[in-house]
Image (cartoon, rainbow, N blue to C red; front, side, top):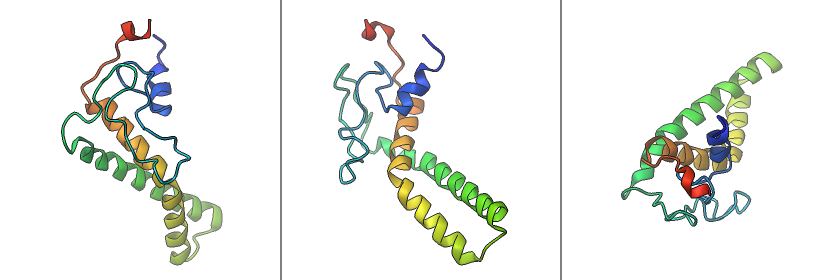
Length: 127
């Protein structure tokens, strides 16, 4: 198995066991339904939500994404635009976080599922 196959599966939001089935029911471009997760994998029938409230833990990963995004935008504004006023920081960070909300939501769930979902890759499902 190629070393970068797991990162490709995470980027494409695929099942951690078979790496073929979609974790989310709708594509990211469907703004009103981007957050809906499939109950189980359409390919290997793995249950994604291990127990009720399983994905609440993804909030910690989401928090890390928000802190990282805030730090990156702040540093960019500071060094590229010569430390503008506080309202520029607040407005820019607010806009960037609002636009990246669907990505942050999805990838915090995907990473949490891969780290704590208890499913390991099964190569026999790909044959």
